[in-house]
Image (cartoon, rainbow, N blue to C red; front, side):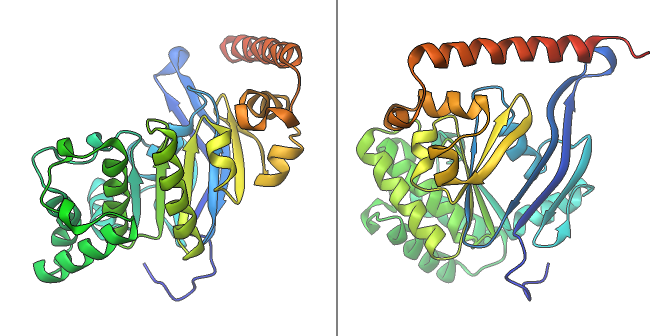
Length: 293
């Protein structure tokens, strides 16, 4: 995978389809999703539970097989990769993932230092160099060296999430996908992690910030894509999405964000929007289940 042209998109997703199940019981998780992420850009992916946010992340990571469409990373199409090719891509650390709960990604039996250097040792980086890089990235997420010997269970939630971000960074990836990275944190730790993400974006890192909380995404994302029932119903600059949402579902999300409510509809209007969306969903489900003529 060449790095000669840094201006090209880090990620290109075109007409992505993901279906679960078989025949009449098949459920459409993603439909016609198109998304690009450029170097130094943070794209927020917003939607309620079940909208397809995590499925999109898992498809980009090769954890679910697309039913159609195309996914490219730094110009290389990865949609049809074999398991062996996916393993090689993951070893190179081109795309990294940060979970909502860092305990899912941090081995409870490994110290912070061991967790940080493990991806580098897999790549064949000498231990001394790996340790130096681990310390450097720990400092980058504003944690002190005295945490290197601690286990994840000895850290606070905010510290664990910062270690998870540092672990994603040590491989020097092209793209980091963050799935609800601050939803489990208190307000102080949430602000700290969001500031780190802003710094990474400003340093040229490409990020996808997945969340159901538009308020958390608003201060970090350059662009926001709104997912509703597996489809992107609106995408645009973050300021436009927040101040002038065009789709009813986006207006509903903006109205539901406590810190953004001043630019949104009233409670009665939000409930009316939600009711209309539920009717649309029911009509769509009936159409999907109807026999072909």
